[in-house]
Image (tube, rainbow, N blue to C red; front, side, top):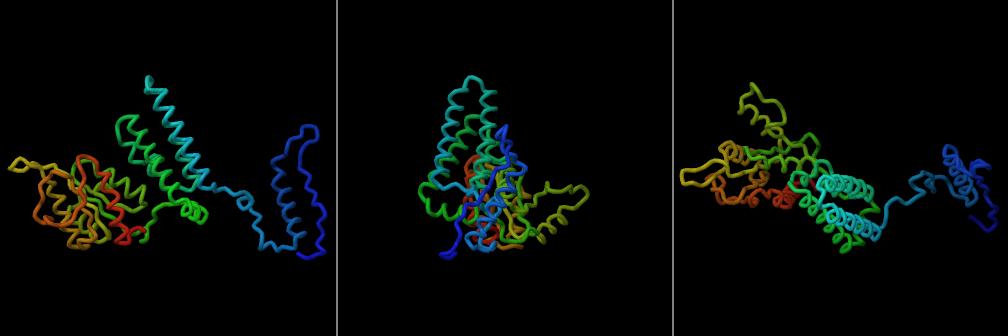
Length: 313
């Protein structure tokens, strides 16, 4: 632009009906495009310097303070639902489901895709817990934790959201790599499966993945050993010992030894329920303990282990 630039007014009559004074949506976008192009010519800018896409015109990503306020509003709404509909459990459940869906969509719009899936998505671990109020409190705790994180590290999240618009764990290895998940009869393994598959986005192999009828277990295990680069074994107390204690099922003990020998000890994560008897081939080795049925308490250390082995980043 120079001193002789003509700052004459660029006319941009909106395509509306004089009688109705209503904007015609089918023509409005074309008029705005033409208006921006004519402005580009006046200020002597090349089209390479200006992004004329609709996304470029309107900043879609809110700043961190507005996200914090949005979280506060959502938590206030949740408190009202929990307090106002205690006498009608059916209505309270319906209200909470609608609220959860709104939170899920809001978090994704803000760029927190992983947080949305983990706490509010259809495959969230939270839905496996009994009790409407318990699930509501767990979701409130997640929102509160996210709020505190944003408030404490505002500059970090301003930069992160501006750069990518999302914060989720992504696989480092190709999708063809597999994580084997071994387990006994206790259904706790399903929560681990959901965590690995739906939250960490990993390919997970379990005995239940495909029909195995007619196949020898040795052949199935050989295929797992060839295709998997990491193993997670869930050891729960299921078999009663002569002394009256409980121990893991023998197939679980077998799988631990096989994968430790094939992949190495550092690539086998052993999630062990507290209170069960140790078995000789892993006695003294490191494992991730969890009390009772609270297997989610192992997820933080499991994620750290997966990062260490460069399965995720």
